[in-house]
Amino acid sequence: MIDLLIVGAGPAGLRAAIAAAENGLHVSIIDEFVKPGGRLLGQLHEEPDGSWVNGVEEAERMYHRAIQLGVEISTGVSVYDLAETPAGWSIYTTDGVRESRCLLLATGASETPIPIPGWTLPGVMSIGAAQVMGNVHRVKPGHKGVVIGVNVLSVAIAREMQLCGVTVDRIVLPAHNLISADASNPEKMMESLLRLSHLAPSSLMKIGGKFVSPKLAARFYPRNGFKIWGIPIQLRKTALEIIGEEQVRGVRIAAISATGSVIPGTEEIVDADFVCIAGGLTPMAELAAVAGCRFHYVPQLGGHVPLHNERMQTTLKGLYVAGNITGVESAKVAGAQGRVAGLSIADELGVLSAAGKEKIKEAVDQTVHTRKHALIQFNQGIEEARHALYTEFQQLTDKKISV
Amino acid sequence: MKSMRVQEHPILGNSEKKEAVTIYFDGKPYTAYTGDTVASALLASGVRTLRKHEETASPRGIYCNIGHCFECRVQLNGSETVRACLTTVADGMYVTSLTLPKGASI
Image (cartoon, rainbow over all chains, first blue to last red; front, top):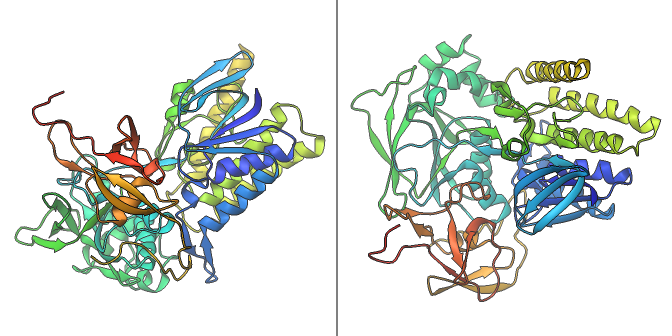
């Protein structure tokens, strides 16, 4: 029996492991990917001061610190079941059953696919798949690609692909269907694109700054889009179908109105040997559901999230969550939450001194601060939504106590 | 075919030299490098189709590349079904496509 088992070796899991092990806990981490680091591994972005944040290096630093503190990290191991026991938790993995007093789920997020005709052809992949291929495995996803879906992730990764020597021909919207919904509507996408202006100030100010409302901006949006880092972003073009027989040969696109209806007679075929679908992220919370956590649907956080408080406790004893499983945010926020979880667990297991308890409060404040200053804001209204969630948690636990 | 490997990178630097190994996919040998996954090694060699769909026989390749979608499942050394994107290569590894034999049905 160990003190803490963590599922997920991303920024949340690693930071939690470090905080817990610094307080003397015996900690193990398991992750199903081939190396530790989670989605930090693919990340590469330029800070406002012009320096680059290299996720691979950051992951390595955290990994070495954790190893130094005696944390055991196993990769290539998947978890398929969990059960609460009198002493803690049993975790069923592809490498046998593990027993732990506390359990932290730091499983991150998964990408939402947008099915459009032809999307099962070899050469069609999620935008994150292309990021991992290029930045982690150092293999190009293809030579010339089209990205379908305009969001924070797709614009950032299109740039990363360019740095790998890949041609990103254009970024277009997905065809309208029940699943793509708002993602196929130029007006709605203009709103989210304007929130990216700090990433590419000059080109976005040119288009966004001219218009007072996203509605107007979408209506007067140039038919062929404008370029960020030389990549055309075409909010007024939609991908109707991905074509090819044995693999991707191209994409059939058409022009659309400001509200997303296809303009007849504007269809054309763009040649490409790969296509990325960017449908956004949603918390990956299956294991919390299997464990029996209470859930809440919070659109600002990306979907269904396990109910938790600001100390990262769930409604189940000894079960904690941190990182994108609690809501889609940047890796820095995930790391800050991980530290909170690690300290909270140390507190539950009774190893924190009075000064240590003070650190939990500092870590919670640090998370709020990091969120406020995050370079990439995935959704709007995150802080407010979180506040509502924590209040809900508080009311629920108060009720339990009064009964 | 132009190389699919990212040898030089302005921020990440140049790829480290890694040891070459041979893996087999449906009987054909391919060069891979230690640290590759089956999925990245095959893509680097221009192989995109990893299996045929069990009912429609339509070709399938990688989709999510991090183990979530199970689209890249292949057979390893004639027995185990694994995800190509989560399986690191080893010299002499024998990988086969999960194609149903002609006339078979599920």
